[in-house]
Image (tube, rainbow, N blue to C red):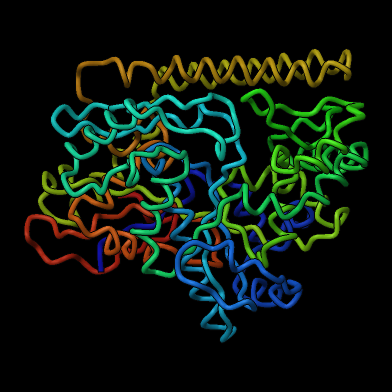
Amino acid sequence: MTAQVRLSPRVHGAWTQRWYAGDAALSRLFGEPPTLDALVEHAASIPPRSGWTDLLRGEPAPEDALIVLAGQQPVLGGGALLVAHKIATAVALADEMARRMKRAVVPVFLLATQDHDSDEIDHLDLIEPTKGTLLRLRCPIQPPHEMFARASWDGVGLQRVECTLKRLCTSFPGLIEDGGTHPIAGHVERLVLRAFGPLGLRVVDAAQVGSRAPALLGQALRRPSDLRDVLEAGDRALTQAGLRVPLDAFDVRPLVLESRAGRRHRLTPNDTDALARLASHPDDFSPHAALRPIVQASVLPVVAQVCGPSEILYLGQARALHELLGAAPPLLVPRLEATYVPPPDARAAGSPESALRAALRLLQPPEGIDDPTRSALGALERAAESLVDAVTSSDPGLLRRARRLRRLIVGRARRLAEAPSFHSALGRGARDRLLPRGRPQDAVLGWATEAWRHDDPVGWARHVVSLCRPGTPPEHVVHLFPDPVANEPPMPDADASPSSAAP
C-alpha cells in the first residue's frame, strides 16, 4: 500500500466532527450523520423512480438501483482535485453500500450545466514543473453568464489550454471533441469517465435532469413565500449553531432562473407571465441552488450526496424544502479531503517515511509562526463581519445589503492576497505544492494532469478511492503518489490518529 498519514480535518470544520458525534442541533440541520448503518437504513425510504436510467452516460444501471451522487460545475480541464475527491468518495461509498445491501448502488457525477457563473469555471491552476510556480490557465466562455448547457468554450483559447496541458503531461487526452466542437461539459465528462468510468462511475447532465421537473419549478413560482420561510428558518438554525449562512434567506425573488437574451437571470418578484413562459418554454428555466437538490431527488433515486463543507451548509439551510415539495432528502456525506506529496518532494526526501514527515512539517508549521498575509486577510474578514453585525443590529432590514457588501469585500481581498502567487517569478518550492496560495491543495490544483502523469488514469483513480473511508468522520489524508520513491518499496499504511499524527 502507498504511505499515508491521517490528520484532523483541514477542509471540513470542527462542526462536522460534532455532527458525527451526535450534536442534536446539527442533526436537525443536516440530517442524521451518514454512518454506513444509517445509509443502509435510509436506503429503504427512497421511493422507486421510473425512466431515470436513460439519463446516465457510461455503463447502464438497473432501474431499481440507488444513486450516490457527487456534483460540480464543468470546470476547465476537469477542475481542482476536490472534483476527483468527491467522485472517489461516491465510488467508495456506492461499492460499500452495494456490498452490504446486496443491491445495485451506483456512483453518479452530476455536471452542473444549469449554473451560469463563468468566472468560476473558466480557469485551471497547476504547478509549472520547471519553475515551481503556480500557473493559471484560462479560456473564455461564449456567451458569458449564460446557462452552461447553452454556452461553449472559445475555440482558440481551448486549443491554447490543450497545448499547455499536453506539454506538461504528454499523455493528456485532449479537450477538443471530434469535429472541433467545444461544449462546456464535453471534455469534463470524457475526463472523469476515462479515469473513474472503469470503477463504476456514471455521469448525468443537470440540464437534462431539470427538464423532467417543470412542475417543481411551477410550485416554486406559485409559493415563493413558503420557500423563503424555509430558508429563513435554516438561516436562524445555522446562526444559532455558530455556522456561516450561505444563502440569502431575505431575497424576495423566487428560487427560479430563466435564460433569455444569452444570459441567465433570477426571476423578479410578481412576474405574472413567468408561469405561462415556463409552460411554453420549460427548457429556458432552471432551479436556484437551494432548489436544485429537490429537483435531483424528484427525478433520481439519490440515497446519499457527497459534499464539500460549503455545500453541506447550504444544503442544510434548505433541507426542509424537500418535505415542503414532497421529495425524500438524501443523507449528506463529506467528501474526501487529501494532500498528495508530489514526486519532486518525495524524491528529495529519499524515502516514503521521510517524505511524509517533511510534508507534515510544512502542513503543520511550529506554533507561533504565522503568514502575515493570511493573518491580515483574517483580520479584514473579522472586521467585515463586525460591520455587518453592527449595521444589522441597528436596522435588520439592511441584512441583505450588508451581507452582499461583506462578500464583495472578502472576495476581492482574497484575490489580492493570492495575487503574489501568480505574479512572483520566484518558485516557493514544496510549500506551494502542498499549500498553494496558503490554501488546501485539493481546493486549488487541478487533478487531470496528475491522473495522466504516468498514462494510467484508472490506476490513479483507484489510488484516490483507496484513501476514502466512507461512513466515518472526516479526516485529512497526506499521501504519496502510487509510484515508489527512489525505487524503494512503499512503506505500510502509516495511519495515525489526529492526536498522534504530528511528526
